[in-house]
Image 1: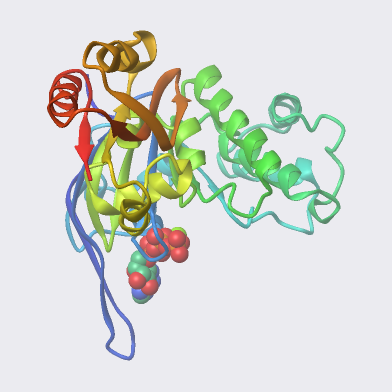
Image 2: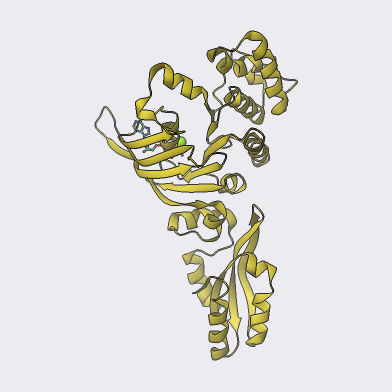
Length: 340
Ligand SMILES: Nc1ncnc2c1ncn2[C@@H]1O[C@H](COP(=O)(O)OP(=O)(O)OP(=O)(O)O)[C@@H](O)[C@H]1O
Ligand SMILES: [Mg+2]
């Protein structure tokens, strides 16, 4: 199967008028598959927006290539590029609505640009308003709407032209947690009902974890980690990912916390990564009983992402030295265990 979006060794550098040079992207390679929701996470300045804007050719790579549906964007310009952009919707943190137009007028803009007939536009906008839950707001001006409602308009406008791809740049970052959850749910239904491939840029781990199938972590223009979201949350490989996951779930301990806890828990201490096996079988208690080891829980938690359990338990172990050794070594064959 052909990937919907392919970035191959994409680098982008900016030089400002005053001669300041920034490598916004360094050698980024990644694929986004048709129909998936792909997350891009990273701190401010990591290059997320620059990467997103490569996909609709609002930015051009300094080197490397970007392909959308098999077409190299470097080969596309003028009318063909405009047409291609009709197939790619975009939503923004600040909504970017026109205040002089009604909700209806805002959503109609891309349809007019794409040459839709007036009658078809009216039908399409009415359908879209129903889909985003704003059926009664057609003739209201954006300034009369809440942030969540504005973003619903932004999403309706972005998908008006029935795009194959939706790019979302911090669409929920200006919203409160409850409204964020509603917009996340709306984005998921955009993906499920219309099969639209979505790339979501965010610095919010809970947004990617509840929305994305796969994600890439960007740091200083580089992809430092990429994989299925469950894997990223349960077994983060890069320190930055671990820090992002940690601040989100708080089931694991920081090195500073461990240092402090070593004083308090002078026994043996381990951290165990939680996965299906640990949740579905009583392996932890069975092994502890079998080896005559007791444990107390120092910190931990189990959460679910796409119905897959993940998390971490930090335990203090009590018992004979040799029994603890045997327990830890057998547990290590079933789960990822670190001693600290
Ligand atoms: N047009 C530009 N001219 C000069 N530098 C730029 C330009 N666009 C982006 N940059 C620089 O490239 C780097 C990456 O910027 P980018 O906007 O992609 O980051 P980001 O991850 O989206 O950050 P944020 O979370 O704050 O939106 C930053 O150092 C930024 O200052
Ligand atoms: Mg940005």
